[in-house]
Image (cartoon, rainbow, N blue to C red):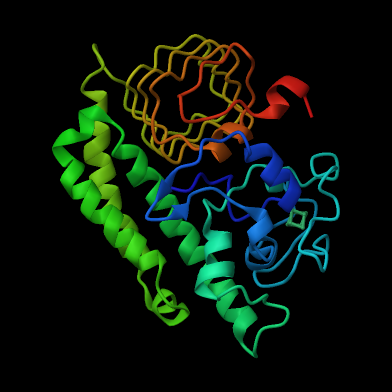
Amino acid sequence: MTPPGAGPARAGRRPLFRMLNGMRERETGGAALRGDCESCFGLCCVALPFRRSADFAVDKDAGTPCGNLGEDNRCGIHTRLRSEGFTGCTVYDCFGAGQRVSQVTFGGQDWRTGPPGQARRMVEAFPVVRQLHELLWYLTEALTLPAARPVHADLRRLLAETERLAAGTPEELAALDVAAHRQRVNVLLLRTSELMRAGTRGKKKNRRGADLMGARLKGADLRGADLRGAYLIAADLTGADLRGADLIGADLRDADLTDADLTGAFFLTQPQLTAARGSTGTTLPASLSRPAHWTTGL
Ligand code: SF4
């Protein structure tokens, strides 16, 4: 469900914090579901790999600290990420996994100064918790959707279980089959999607996983569409009607959402939105914020 373009890159401490600071906070079981870089030891800048591409200027292996990460866990180029070729860093969010692993799982002990083996264990735990927190985000959202009421009890059960798993010890996290848990959650999110989209009148388009890269969808009627995992990279969605569409995992990098209507679109995350282009005329779901670069161009 992670948008292909959103990982495995990591965002910079300051820029990420700044760009997401307008994002409405979703909390469940005490876990904040957005990155709080001030409470994290720069884990995404260490744990995640990236490859030289349009999103990253250099190669970096998993577990290797980024060359731009300072001893104070701040990004040395945070004001220039886009101009220096690290756009991928500006659109990443850990959904709060960084502060949980730093402050809870490892009790506030920095990977630099912890006992032997701690850095490796933190690097291993971070992506697992990140996936669990992403699931918490979706489950929490699903519980806000009135049409999903028939599955609310099941959603609550899986929410509690996911929260329990995310609170596991490093050893428990290492042993967790997170892919299997994702699959269980996904079944319920699919059912939620069906219930939600059933409320949209007319024929609903099914574009699940479709290759729509660069597609000309200007003004398209995509109300209630299934766009799960669709590749919409650089698609022209200007003026498109995406009301009530399921956008879970859709890759919206460089997609043009100028004047598009996303009212009631669901399972859309801030990183997906930040990776796209848009305008003041784009209508957003209530839980998301307009990315700063849509208006400033920076
Ligand atoms: S450039 Fe490096 S240090 Fe800066 S945000 Fe990206 S991964 Fe982190």
